[in-house]
Each structure stands twice: as C-alpha cells, then as structure tokens.
Image (cartoon, rainbow, N blue to C red):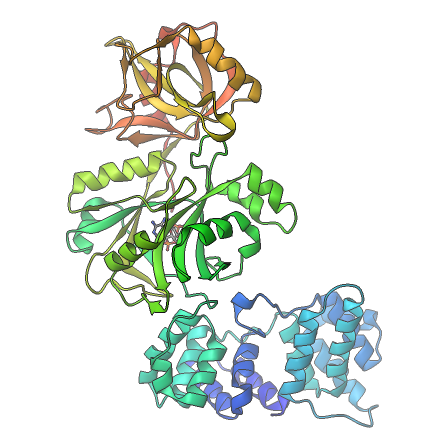
Length: 586
Ligand code: ATP
C-alpha cells in the first residue's frame, strides 16, 4: 500500500468540517487498506503505533525533526527554523522545502505504508547512545523518498501534530460501515474495543474474521479493560431513588485507580488512563501476587497512601512520590500503600464483565485473602437514607472522599468505557478547611504496630465542653510524632493512665489505654467534617452526628502551660466548622 493513499486521505479529512463526511472518507481509506496493514493504518490515523497500554510512543522533539528535514532537503536548520516561525507548522514547512528540493533529485523510491510504519517503529524503540543520530537518519531516509505532501504528514505524525481529530468513536463508526455490514455493527465493535482497548485488533478481527467473531470477543489478560465510571448525585434520597430503592454503598477511597492483571506470578498494573504503571508499585504487585487466590484474574482496586506508622489513610497527593523512574524503593518505604479492591472482571477463564455487581463482588470476596494492606472495599447494603448518610460520614472521616453507590439490579453489568447510572458517586459538597491549630487533651491511646510496637500508634484527643464539664473526642492522631516523642510519650503518660474511660470523657471509640484528661498537645488538621464516630458537638450541626478533625498532625508542641480545661472548646470547633464552611467545586 502506498503511503500516498494515506496522505491523500488525510488531506481530504482535514479539509472537511462535517463529521459524516469525515467518517465516509475514513471508510474509503480503510477499504483501500490490505488486511495485513489494517491495524497499522488504524493506529497511524490516531497518531500512534500501538494501543496506548503498550507504552511505545511515537514522537520526536521538533528540534530533531528539523535536523532530519535539513538533512533530507539540503537546506540549513536555520532556514527551516525561520520558515517554521512564519508557518507555525513544521509539517507545512517540510512540504515547502521538499517541493524546492525535488527539482534537484534524480531518483526516489516510492514510499509505502510498510516503510513508514517500520521506520517510525524503529525510531520509537531506539534507545541509548547513538539513538538520536539513528532517529534523525531514519526520519531523513523517509523524507528523502517522500513527496512533499507525504513529507508533511510524516512530520505531523512524528511530532504529534496530526490534528485530524479522528476520535475512537469515529473509527468505530467507520469500521462498522466498512467491514461490519452497516451502522448496526457499531455496538459490537464498541464492546470489543471497550474490553480490549485495542482499536487495531478490533479492526483486524472484523476484517479478517468477520463480525460474528467480534461478537464473541472476551476480555483478555494483558489487555486493559476501559474503566467503568460513575455518575454523580448530591443526596442519599436521589441516589436511592435512582438505584431502585436499594444499593451497595462502598467507601470511595481517595487514591489511584488500578486495574491489575494477574497471570500466574506475573502481575501487570494499568492506570485509569490505561498506562502500564507496574513499575511504580512493586509493593502492590507483591500484595496481589500473594493475596489473590486465583491463577489468573483481572481485578480493580484503589491504591491509597497510608501512614507507615499507624496504617491510617493519607491524602491522595502522597502518591505523587511514586510517579518517578528512580528511587521507587525509598518511596515505597516512606509512602507505603494499601489496596482496596472493588471489582473482579475475570477469574480463571471466566469473563465476569456481564455479571451483575453483587455477583462480581461475591467473586472478589472469594479470591481476596485480606490482610493489613489489602482489603475488599468497606461496604453496606442499604435501603435506608439515614444509614446511607451515616456511612458517608464514616467514609469521609476515615480519609475517603465519600461513597460510590452501586446498583444491585440484575442488569448491573460492568459498563466498560462508560459513565453510567449503575455507579453513583456521593462526595462532600462542603468541607471546612482548618487553618488554625487546636489544643486538644489526650484521653486515650491505641497500641502501635510495626515500627511503633511498644509505643503508641495514635492518641485519642478531645475538646472541652464547659457546659457539661465533659471532654468530647474529636480525632485520632498518629502523625507528626518524632522517634523521640514516641519514646518519651509512654513515660510521660504513664502517671495519667487509668483502667477505664475517665468519667469526664465522652467517647464511643474504645481506646486500648485510657488516661485521665491532663496532657494537652497542639495539632493541625486538614479540615473539620461531620462524623458518626466522634462525639464532639454531637447534634449541634446535624442530628446523630458530631464533628471530627481529618488528617490531624501533632505540631511538636506539648502545651504544658495549659490545663485540660484550657483546651479548645467544643463551641470553638463548631465556630471553626461554620466559619470555614466553603462550597467546593467537584
Ligand atoms: P473522581 O475525581 O470523583 O474520582 P473520576 O472521574 O476520577 O472522579 P469516577 O468514575 O467519576 O472517577 O469515580 C469513580 C472513581 O472512584 C474510580 O475511578 C475509582 O478510582 C474511585 N473509587 C474509589 N473507591 C471506589 C469504589 N469502592 N468503587 C469504585 N470506584 C472507586
């Protein structure tokens, strides 16, 4: 197949403003394509060489491309650069310089799609010393044989500026018409794409084996399934109504979505955008290898940063430390993670994507051997508004964003690649950011584990309510303590230890150790939220709920100058909550 067919097709597609016309032109181009090249032509029209999840990217910096154009045309880099300043498009500039150059050329080999693809592929894979020169000479080789128009599109492809605007859905429409017998075939092609994320493979299958084979497409280990997404509503009443009066409500963990493909001992991780992120999370791979009791499986999880000392969830931003090539081992130690599993899409030969969610969840529970760092998402099944609201508060307080409420209907399949009403997210509309520190009294403690064995994992802290002369718990704080603090604390607190909750302490949480309210420490939290667990300001904002401080951190200040009764009062916490209440977008 001559590359000029592609270049002509692109030129016409670029010239049209009508979507239908664009699809027709694409149909024409696909029909001119031989079977063995169809996948490559599909990738090329989208400016790619492979599906995204393979991770091999086309692309070369403009500066290097200019060097190749110079080499192929005999003009200087400076002349080419000057011209790009005028045209604003290296593609167009290349076309111009190739036009001038052709007058001086005696022999040209005709450019074929095969040659273009093979050279671009070699360029994409070139690595190490000498790779820059290799890339330039491969590109210059193509340009030397290209017509001006072909050169323009080769350059645009390689610099990522093809701008044809051919979306996945347009390709699917075109494939349906070209090889599927008409528009009705589109839904089968779309499903095949959604469960394989590989348009080239879908195109090849329909052209070589027909639509019936496409209809039988199944999920396949190693090919990421395009993720199902959630719609959003802002109240339990709307959510339950939409989901037929009942749902599975799960914590919406605030981390990074991971789709894990386990094949024996081999685990591959894909991000929400289907990039291969296996190298960022060796710890997740290890967990999945050891705790998924199936030979082969595709499961989904939220990967959440946790406090290395307390195991509590940390804000999403801490995962950013994993986005690097080197130093992953250190990042793993400093910013450990936990996995919260929320779907099973394939287990040992069985495609579960068309099973309803309750069945998928049951299968997931069966194969996950839970431990400290790998759990199935916390959930309730409920038809009760109040219970849903309470569970939402519990989720937020535990460090989650809110809930994902899932349909329990028979047709609640995994809608790959779609945002639908089978999953509805319920996030906080309001949050109250904290800017001031608060002084809180230590009323209890929880045993530490791991590095903190023998000392405290977290302290239970309370605010003072002078009206009833009680200390009301408002948070559990395990962050911000130095090794020295941790050594010192048990000694310091020993003299205040008592065998049961102090009668002036109000708490629904059961601490491992209780203290007489004496020692005051300064903490800074991220925000104040409604809480079904902490009793501070119970019923003041909403019936049945108290207030809690999220993500508290010890500032290092022991307020030895303060008595327990001098701590921040419940009234002050209510004021802080109200004053800082902000409507947040999203
Ligand atoms: P957001 O920014 O609200 O996370 P989003 O557009 O990234 O939205 P949505 O599909 O709207 O994603 O919301 C679902 C996301 O929530 C999933 O992509 C997943 O990463 C995350 N999540 C956390 N816990 C769960 C859970 N239990 N079930 C499903 N998704 C969950």
